[in-house]
Length: 388
Ligand code: CAA
Image (cartoon, rainbow, N blue to C red; front, side, top):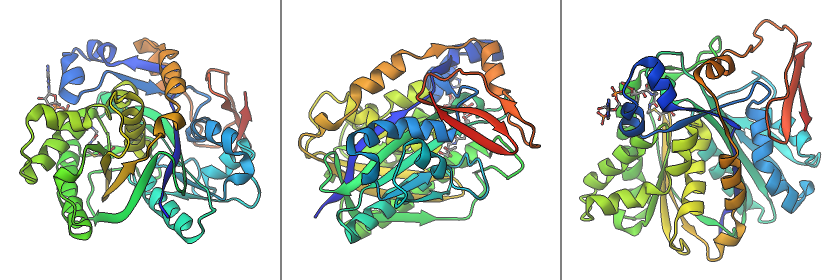
């Protein structure tokens, strides 16, 4: 029996800032962003959007198809937690009308936790093949204004149904995991923005890639030439390009530079338009590859490198299933992205500074999202989510 991704769908906010606008205000050359880090736009969450509403929006098309009672477990991966105790997925469970027998839990390890969720979901399905596990990764990437990280902000959520005999990607059981206690990027409980040692984080990312790849190769006996495509964690698209060149060099790959570039090019399109979405980013990269690659991916082998600062990394692999095209949400993704509204710099600042009550104040939120769910209010320390 094979196990893997049976369906995949993503969601991002209807607002974005063009990085040319940011560059102009910072008196920076826009090419630093467009070419230097490889990013064009960053998605900004609406005031009435958070990880819960984005997650419910991402998962809705899947739940509408299979029915709410079919989901046996919901695993919610995030590093933008809204509560120290209650799992964000429990709100999503109600918004999507999932059955009361469905278990829900939240997972955290920076951008890596979605991969932990996928691996755990595969194990649950292997143990009980009629299980259908909904994995959702949802995050809002925020840095302090006027820091190098600011241009890499973004937001998004991705939902994946993990099942037996999947119709999109079969995931192989072999993995190469790597853990090391480092302080490259973190967010203490008292901060809403991440702290980051930017240059150091890029070095640790590359070190973790090397180690995870070596462990993966020991376990799977695979080599670089066994893969057609690679999906990397995408803090910004240039990071993935550098990582892939690094891996190709380590493996003494004989392909030319253009062929190496081609192995990841289609994974980058959505990220370049959305920005970092932390736990969701590698899987939105997978959506980008599946939706945008002209040649058929049937039977093609994909290498995945998941990286979560702090750090835990994992290399694993999967093979695309025949007929996968019929299961994709390509048209819905395209129309969501083309319907987005550009904001100017003042509107960006207003979205950035939108009040996030830390002291228990009540707040009624204006209806701004075009999504199907919204955060309507916060009162008596409770978040009130409603369908639109
Ligand atoms: N035209 C073209 N390119 C230009 C340019 C111009 N006018 N000006 C600068 N560049 C190039 C630079 O040469 C540089 O390229 P190289 O990396 O190839 O040398 C690139 O643009 C970036 O310029 P800087 O190195 O000067 O950029 P910076 O120091 O201001 O910021 C960063 C870079 C430190 C990565 C910053 O974006 C950051 O802190 N990001 C957040 C942390 C992050 O994303 N880390 C990634 C690994 S950790 C992780 O992956 C987890 C996660 O999700 C956060």
